[in-house]
Length: 86
Image (cartoon, rainbow, N blue to C red; front, side, top):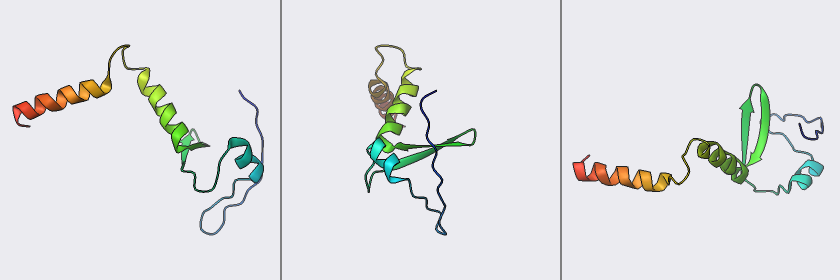
């Protein structure tokens, strides 16, 4: 497991939290960055939208055989459906 840090934070009346400046700076997070919060087994993980997308792609690629293009497969299915009149 990687290094860990701990900071105390408070949830405000609107349900917002402030991520400490040193954490934001270390992660390269800036105001306006789009973030994703993932909950797994009660543990919250905050990722940038880009990192969440990369991780999702990695998971999907574990199940796609080498040399297979999901885009090509989808286009083929759509063309076949259009030819059938679906």
